[in-house]
Structures are given as C-alpha cells and as structure tokens.
Image (cartoon, rainbow, N blue to C red; front, side):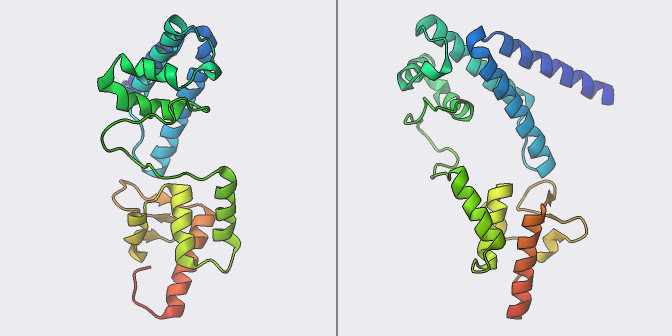
Length: 221
C-alpha cells in the first residue's frame, strides 16, 4: 500500500511539473510558486482536518494558469504578470464561457495584483464579504488575546474564525464534550478530525469555560 501511495504521489508530482514547464519562461516562476502554495495549503488542511485540495484540483488550477500564460504571450503580447489587466483576463475568459466561474476562482487564488477583481460569474459561490488587512487581523488578534474588555464569547468566535477558519455555526454548536483537554483539540462542526488548538485558541476556550462557571449556567459553552 505504501509503495502504491508513493507511486501515485510521484505520478502526480510529474503531472504538476509538466504543467509548470509548459508555462512560458517569463511567467513560469509565479506559477511555480503558486503550485508550492497549493501544496503547502493542502498539508495545512490535512493537519487541521479540513478538506484538502485533491491532485486533480491542483492540476486543473495549474492547467488554467498555463493556458492563461500562453494566451497572454501569444494573443496579448504580454510577458510579465504585472502588465496584465482586467481586459486581458476578460478576453481569455471569453474563449470558454462554461469554465468562467472556475477560472475566476483560480485567478483570485493566484494573483497578488488581482486582474480578475471586478469580474463576476453567475451563480452562487463561496464567501463574498469584505476581508481584513493583515494589520486589522493583528489588531483583532491582540484584542481577543490580551484585552480583558473583550467578551469571552467574542474572543472564542474570533480566534477560531481567524486561526482555524471556523464558521459561526461551527462555534455556535461547539460543546464542552467536543473538547479534548489532554490533547487540546476541538471537534468543529462536521470536520472529519479534531482540530489541534494552538495556545492562543486554547486560552480562548478556557476563558469561555471560566465565564460559564462564573455564570453558574448549564449552557454548553
């Protein structure tokens, strides 16, 4: 079984590399870095017990970026990512309307200067709200870990969302029985594995439990 797994991983690595190698040279380094990002994200998801990207998903994303890179060189005469704009992306999307939504998702994950910003795809998608800057995230982290004025429930919800991608529903249904005090893990929603909690997250859990004790309530958390 281990040999079969190793063989599958080698084959997947080869497929990823072929897609990267097919990207024009001036655009290739960023696509290579994007591949590394997706692989590292997959490992983090596995450790956290969330849904990791499959080999097929990663390979499809790399194929999309390969096709876009070739289009930019051959059809738009642009050899660097910093030169592309929304019109370039729109022209590429027009060539395959049925894959527009998936391509936009991949572009949003890939680009630092997002030429897909402002473009939309019909149909429901994932999170579409405002995101926080790193400075705003750091400020909230400090509030939830060091500010005694922050309510324990606010701190727990914020920390689990910020550090573990927990939804409000996952935190709302969290019960004391979902906690492993020895391993310092928590079962969040329907995730297949307990989520390891870092010291800041566990401290937020303990503040909530202490608050419950002070209130002399039978609430679950």
